[in-house]
Amino acid sequence: MMVNASRVTQQQSAPKTILVVEDEPLLRLVVSEVLRMRKMTVVETASAEEAEAVLAAGVHVDLVFTDVRMPGRFDGLELTRRLRARDPHLPVVVTSGHLDATGVMDGVSFLRKPYLPSDAVTLISTLLSSEETDDI
Image 1 (cartoon, rainbow, N blue to C red):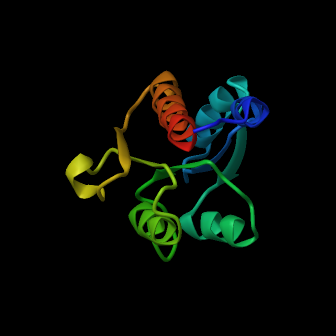
Image 2 (cartoon, one colour):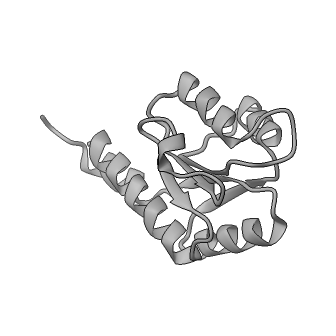
């Protein structure tokens, strides 16, 4: 199989867009800023409904990082189900202090709260790196 080197370079150099869905403003800010420091583009929302509206508006994201418990009609787990129904390959990280990994659907990454921002960045970077490798 032949790989177009300029295409690979473009994919690897293009900033990745992360959708951060977190109702706690301080935590959302910290995670978002750490991701921005890593040259990622971040879209922030405070609820699953806001996240769904962002995606319905056509905003492309490379990964979704979502809390489970949030105010609104549905939570982060339902958001994850909806996202995976539309795009089964979209990387999703679910975070919670009230749930463990067994409560998360297959193929979805889990990060238990409280977590260090560096742990979130490491997990996100790993998932994005594996996505790039899968695309080549």
